[in-house]
Length: 197
Image (tube, rainbow, N blue to C red; front, side, top):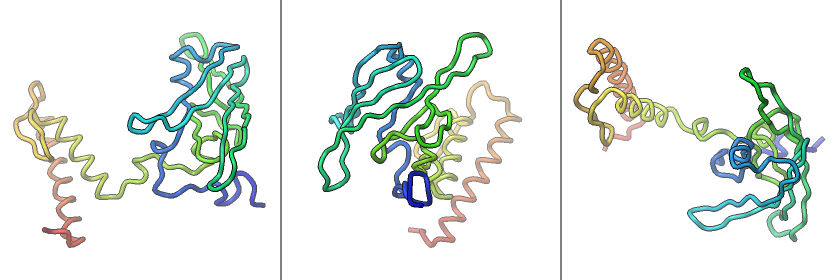
């Protein structure tokens, strides 16, 4: 009871999303050539151009070793050595894809997040994606804007005009009807919430 993965032990602030915490992306590391056996280096993070953290890593054939320092608020810094096993899947056209196995739940993942002392998957930290934290109104506005950019030649500040060149009129009319539905739903939500200015 009360250990890793039980109950709300690892629950992070509900407003915090995967985009707001340090993460390690195996695809990025592979693309940069950082996952060759016996490779050593460091991973660095920054916030608005300012350094916000770094860790040392060593890559082996079957796992990634992380070396870093961590502290909880008010506590002293402590050295942490974390070992993250790899998993491999065969690709359809040959070769293989490399994955992390979450050190806590052993789930095959491409990203690990540094919320607490260890880098774990988003499921263990119960981190939502940014889109999951959006409200109903935010989702409506986002859908309308995406559709507007798709169908209008000119689209700025939530307003569009002129059918996109090359789009069939039948397609435009069908998508424009959906655009109007979204616009109506947004206006209805504003009226319902009493947000009219």
